[in-house]
Length: 247
Image (tube, helix red, strand yellow):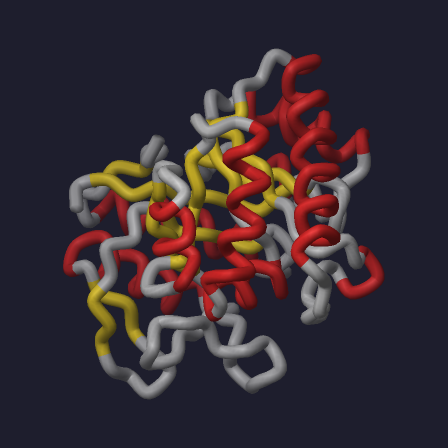
């Protein structure tokens, strides 16, 4: 791999956004479900535009109290409503700001549930297709998200996570378990280079998992997000990898 997309979750009201937008190539912008207000969404859209980044929507369960990281059992109609509401919100603001949305990436518990259950993923991604079939989906590599998005005819960009630990089945270690979130910038950078140059992710037990991920996510709410992003950029550049959008 000669290039790798770095996407950051932003617009969530965290203090790292401005710095991250100067480093990454794609901006996954919260759209009022788990986080995000009109002010933070507009700021994220303007920041993405100013830095020449590809912008995408980052919807999750409407559960700001738990930052969208609590698993909710909602029916298909309610999930469709929540997705449509968030996508309509960010699409409208993006038009006003002169920013073209290129992709959708699920957040938090919704993303994890959709990674495990193709039915949930299909409901979420059908809302994406109904809004704009030209939108791509950043889908977690090795997950049910990929099959669901492809079945709906949506363009898929396989995604991995820079600052999260992996299980051997390719899914993320739950945040409730120790070591699920990585904070060591040097270690995360090493893992990113291995993904970009060898197509491998390292799992929690130390084994290598083949991956065709084209985009690597950084969580904007990680306290070390900016340090990790800078270390990633330096390490990837030194390894001859270009940081560029996959879209």
